[in-house]
Each structure stands twice: as C-alpha cells, then as structure tokens.
Amino acid sequence: MKKPSVLDWDNLRYFLELARTGTLAAAARRAGVEHTTVARRIQQLEKRIGAPLFVREASGHRLTEAGRQLLPSVEAMETAVLGVERAAPANASAGGPAGLVRVGATEGFGTLILAPHLARLTQQYPHLSIDLLAVPRMLHLSRREADIVISLERPQRGSVVVTRLTDYTLLLYGEREYLARHALITRREDLRAHEFINYVDDLLFTKELQFLDDVFPPARFTLRSTSIMAQYQAVRAGAGLAVLPAFVADRDTQLARVLPGELRFTRTFWMSMPAEGKHQARIQAVWAFLKEAAQAEAVRLLP
Image (cartoon, rainbow, N blue to C red; front, side):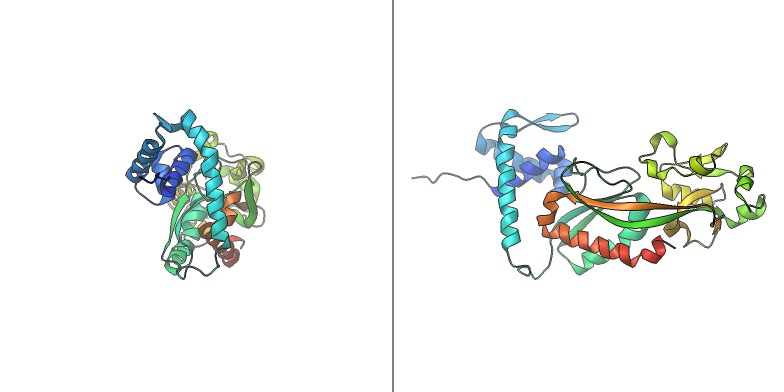
C-alpha cells in the first residue's frame, strides 16, 4: 500500500514568506535562497494540494481563495515550530544564531554606525547573515520589509516590540573655506547672508527631519536631496550650510560647527520588531547586539 504523502514544511515556509511579502524576490531574501527556489517550492505545494495558491499580478503575488484558507493553518504550524525552538537548550547549536536577519535603518546611521558593528557580528557568528537596508525612507514591519527597523518615529500600531534605542545630536555645519569666504556668523541673524542645503520638502519621509523652518527659514536652498550623505558631500564641496548628524560631520576636519550653542537638535532612534521576533533566536541575537552597539557609540552620537 502506498503511504499518503505529507506536506513539506519547507514548502509551507516559503508559502508563508510569499504570502507575507507579496513578491518572490522579497520572500527569497527573507528565506535566504534564490527566487527560483521559492517559485519551485510553491509549484510543488500547489501540485500537492491540487489548487493554485497565488495569482500573479503586476505588483506581485496575491493569495487565491485556497491560499487564504491555507494561511491560518500554516501560521499555526509556524507558531508550533517556534515553540519547539524555544524549548530547545540555549546552547544546542555550538555555532550560535543562524539564518538571515534584515535590519532597516536611516541612511546615515545605518552606513556609518551600524555597518561596521554588524560586520563584526557576522564574523562572530559565521552562520548568521545580515541584510542592512540603510535607506532614506520609512521601512514597514507590517509589509515584512525588515525583521528589525530603526526609525525616527515610534511605531504606534501593530503587534510590535519597541524600544528607545538612542538619542543623537544634530548641528549646523559649514565647510571651513566656505565660512572663511562668507560673512562671519556670530548670531542667528547673520545666517541671512548664507546659502543652505536641505531635504526635499515634499519627499521628506518624517517630520523629525524638519529643522530650519522652525528656527530660521532660509530664503533659498542651493541644493536639496533626499540623501543625508549627499547633503554632507555638498557641504564638504562648499555649497552652503546644512544641519547634519554630529556622528556624520564631526569626523570630518573640513567641516566646522556653526552657532553650536544656539542651534543644536536632538532626535531619537526607535528600534522595533514584530512580536513573533521575540521567539526567534537569530532576531533576538541581532536585537541585543544593536542595543549594545548603540551604547558603545554614545559619545559619538551625543557629543
């Protein structure tokens, strides 16, 4: 007698990732495989079930009615698997945490602060892989764009775990030769004779990056960019003054602070993850490491 076949958990895991992310590429990144692997596994699962689970559209993959009916059962299986992982001895794997963790962060913080630390973490745990999304936009946990998100606004909705990661300082900076060529700045009113660099207003992804309009609205910007690193490079080139994070600008001897006693801003980085991340060893390892990294960088972040 032929034994009845059973559903392959790997196929179901890929189904879950595709249902959550909506695209083969995103599901593959989260699973740490090629997108062709996800597609092949989904085809195997559909053949086993005998019904299509997704409808392919221009924007990605959408669940069919059969897929929607299957989803709660697979999520329950995932919960059970996570329960088994939690029950396993903490040191069961000598190699430490393993798998892929995607970390989203603002561009400057991700590039200059997190990247060197996370590189050392992957050296410490050779079976751990990190996707660092250091981008000038808001990343969404609800869309499964990342496993851990570091943002300038505290998430207000959803089943998420949130912690205040760190505060950081921003100041007004200018390139030293630019400052020598232009009118001396000893008070806020002197800024009227200067040129400025800033974000593009209608593309600003958070109100936490609004600075100059509140204290000194410039008449004209010589350059605007969605990228803080582009703004920094423009200041270095002598294009004007800009509010920059101290951890970006203070390391550069070509730049000087402008009115540091009067124009000083403080913002907060919030770190969040989906509630289920509390039960995943790889995410917990990165979460704890990021908290330690922020503490280690305290002097640089809050000079």
